[in-house]
Length: 463
Ligand code: SF4
Image (cartoon, rainbow, N blue to C red; front, side, top):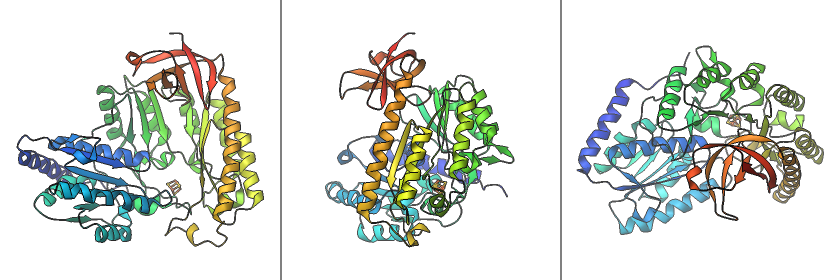
């Protein structure tokens, strides 16, 4: 059975609510402020909420004390997330005291954990709206109820549906995200995502391609296709490699990226699609999590170290200049010195261009949280420091190979921390610093790499 789509009538009702709210504002343009925690999925959800707010007539502000509507889009992946979120929401009390008309809202993954949402509602009675990840498309209707004097607590347990056709206010720039699927079926034993984002559901290929065409018309030249596990994308038999080839055909698009790839589902067909599609960048984020087969099994990752290394070989043989980035967890329950050594040796063997390292932290409700053999905090800290040292030496050493090479960068902005230089990324995601000025932002330049700078590169423009 395919995914469920939100009925057209409900989306039409959302647009009608936007119109009613717009009329209610009588030409006024109040300010909204959104604070987003967590991954690109959440960032993208915030873009959708901003799109609806702007369609109503709200204007964005980065100053929360000036705002008439404040929204926290929460995440529950990181340690102490609840404490941090509750702390930040608590600060709003004073702003609300100064401006009783202020509307405050909390949504996102953390609110999908009903017990946490109830605690938040009880502790902060001044929060007007609490809603989960499955209610984004009815946000205008919920806001209308609040404006009528109600308080909203709306968190559905049912499997999420796919809502198409809502307005989006994309972050400024030349690079943007397009969701291709939602949810995850993998239940890695440490991860809360399948519990808060629901089961996998893929968008229709034609809706994705239409959205890519639309963002290209808006002026974006780089698109990242998003999903918790893009490799299991399936629209009535159309799999991810085929989708990638079709999106690659979109006229005007210059660069195509995707994330995240689960190693157990990375196929040779995808490697060949990467190799053969001219717009697909030579970069893949392939989270390995551990180099120990015993720990990978406990993590329920369903691949081995050997299989991962085989994928790396396939990628390097076929995708010219490919760079691989990864995520690694140390201090998983029962991890021994030997397991850690396996992870460190894998880092050296692969030569990642970047690795995001984490000390394992308990997520209530996951299998790993109930495992025996939890590792003491100071041991986790010490192991993380050892891992980071190995990553740093491996990444910095690998940067030298770029010196003398040529490539193309998309200039993103000016670095003001050190020397005033412009920066942009190669297709491989390596950051390159060059001399120049703001007029270069958003344009592509051919560069020759002349040196390295921490974990990035320095180059000169040749075209
Ligand atoms: S693949 Fe594993 S780590 Fe990634 S979202 Fe799904 S359960 Fe979490």
